[in-house]
Amino acid sequence: MSWIKEDELNLLEKISANVLKAGPMPKHVAFIMDGNRRFARKKHMERQEGHMQGFNKLAETLRWCKHLNIQEVTVYAFSIENFKRTKDEVDGLMELAKQKFLKLLDERENLEKHGVCVRVLGDLEMLPLDLQELIAKAVITTKSHNKCFLNVCFAYTSRYEITNAVREMAWGVEKGLIRASDVSEALLSECLYSSNSPNPDLLIRTSGEVRLSDFLLWQTSHSCLVFQSVLWPEYSFWNLCEAILQYQLNYKSIQKARDLHQEHQALLQLEADRACVAEHLQHHGNGKPADAQRRQEALLHYTTCREERIQDFLEALKHKRDSYFSDLCSKDVLA
Image 1 (cartoon, rainbow, N blue to C red):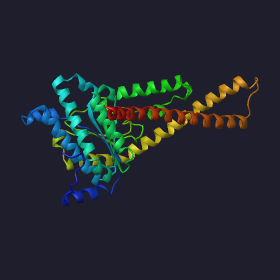
Image 2: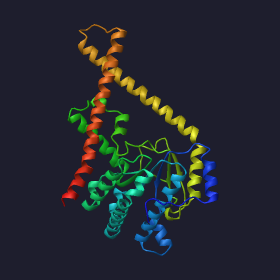
Image 3: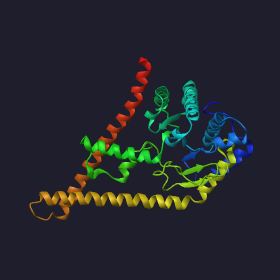
Image 4: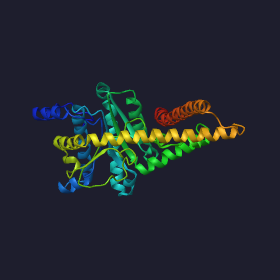
């Protein structure tokens, strides 16, 4: 099945979509697509067929999101923990992923038509090299598209992502790009795999499980979480509408929590900058207390320098990550 389905909504679905769109709509929705294996057992089919049905449902769900003006979707496709499954199942999932990324590359004109940018988030070096190369091609082929975004979390867990972000900041300090005092919650967010995306407004998990399973733990601290009992391959447009309605009912409290968190972050950063400036003035002030104007000038200078350091570091980090994909594409061409 195609990654992008062209079908229109039926009349009842269109009416319902328009009613929903009269209220606040999530711009970014994340899915834990759970229940493929249980669906296969229920229907007396092979596990691999259950996973195939799960992909088909993803394509259908992306169509619904497009009609609902949801610009970004993030899906939990393969956890690092999934490597612990049987070799046959893991090999089958890797083969399915290869087929689907090959299909994506065959559909590049359709993806360009709809402006779909595909990103793959995770430690891709854990994957077979030929799959890494296909993913790199897909990412580079669609990177300039900007109408809607599909983030596929593959060889991913949130704790691994956060640990990797800490490593990236340590690398920046080691290289002299940033100082240890520049490390902050905001900077860690910029070092996550998902740094190009806003945090999800709504996270949906299917199959009745009421846990996040190490998915987007950092990013969903102020998101609406909806747990639904339906198995992923049986997910419907109406299930999605139900989840969006839950988001709308909780919209004001979610926005208030986000605004308060942003204000708190800004205050913490200001306090940290002031502490660094005070320490600097104490060491270089010849024992004389600095007046208010000098402290304010020093704070402005320090803040400007810190922001420049961080910007240079983030550009270096982006270059390092982009090089991984471009190098993979180069290897594939040489092969």
